[in-house]
Picture (cartoon, one colour):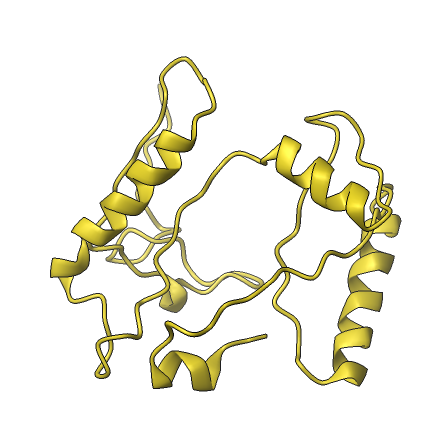
Length: 157
């Protein structure tokens, strides 16, 4: 006879109960989601352009703060842009493995140098402890001229 699931491990919202580092109080729903993809997996800048168009068209959901320039942090998820990263990394002396043989971490670190250095040290050590090779850091250019006051005052870098 099949086991009956009496859902003792979930709460009324359908989320698992608090366990270890997981806490359902941090769960939230997105009120607008869009998907743009090439069904054949073909890479194209048009996919990026359409993804941005989706975000712009979701503005009606109230995704701005009181200053109307501060958004809710919506963004797009893309494939690792290997050609771009290879070019950028080569320019700073980092040699990348072949596509699919490396990963990318997007790290928002403290602005102050001492805690920033400590964060980087922890990340580098963790990568090595996991049996991976740490390749390096790339400072990403930031243009914050379009940010609203609320976003500018709380930006991580």
